[in-house]
Length: 57
Image 1 (cartoon, helix red, strand yellow):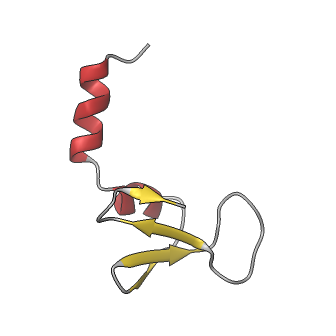
Image 2 (cartoon, one colour):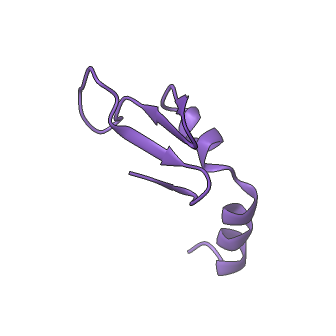
């Protein structure tokens, strides 16, 4: 198992948009970023990354 301290260090230093951007082409839309969902096939971007909240949905 990964030590809790290591997990905390990664969460504090990694920028979510950079990590997701390695797998999904993201474009800025306001304060968030959008891209095609990596979990299913789609033509219109529905995958949202919120850097200010450090989340994706």
